[in-house]
Image (cartoon, rainbow, N blue to C red):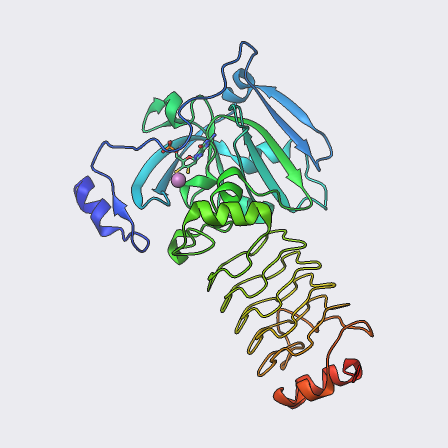
Length: 348
Ligand SMILES: Nc1nc2c(c(=O)[nH]1)N[C@H]1C(S)=C(S)[C@@H](COP(=O)(O)O)O[C@H]1N2
Ligand SMILES: [Mo]
């Protein structure tokens, strides 16, 4: 087979297009921070032994070739790109992550301290590479030279140019694009996880995420997993099929909002307000609902506790401060009714 036959035999993720041979678009920052200081790479955070290496030292480590299919979220792909370097796991072996380290953040030697993050386990399982060369040449500056990370199997914004710092964290710290532009934090191109919402003005969503003001917005299907949105104001917002799994939504206001079929599993909804909201079919398993107010909310088909064994999410947490009227339980399955009845009372 010729090279082009090999390339076309490989299927691309949905809605991606292969770049012309020899082409490689430059995306985002074009150059690292100007600095006289020697280039060093630090490994910090939740590790037994924090380390700092000079670039020269790292470059002497044994290197290998790794073929990678690049998929940029802006819809170009460059399959079969050959990166040269070593695996992230090699770097981590030297410092031994502590048991609490669940996330890894890569920070760039760039003016805006550009960064991106991944669950640590995922970064390792995907075979993240610390790369110094590409297709037989040292990495060009605009493509992250002298050293970048490459994460196979994720959109290319998870691959950081000009690596300066690797930090292990207990809690996730959203990366630059993920935070500023609403890029999806999971970024799997095969699932088209491009943006946390599909058809919204990105500046609008960036602004709303920064100010925590979703009031009255139509953001059906928004995927906000892994965010932290305490005190969010989402009154009267249209949030059907939204995904707020494991999101910090303490004291959030969803009064009058439409959350039908929304995913709120594991969310922290302590003190959240759902007054007159539509939460039909919404999933509240394992959510913290202490102090949450469901006055006047429509609960048809909503779930709060598993209906079967071995479900990923356990029962929600409620207590005497959760506001729920016995009448509201009538719209629920018997399993849900039995679970909720100790917490429902008539406050009038
Ligand atoms: N330091 C830094 N790394 C970055 C970016 C950036 O702006 N700054 N952009 C990301 C994005 S969105 C993409 S698609 C790739 C682009 O890499 P390239 O310019 O080598 O194609 O780098 C990623 N890493
Ligand atoms: Mo990108």
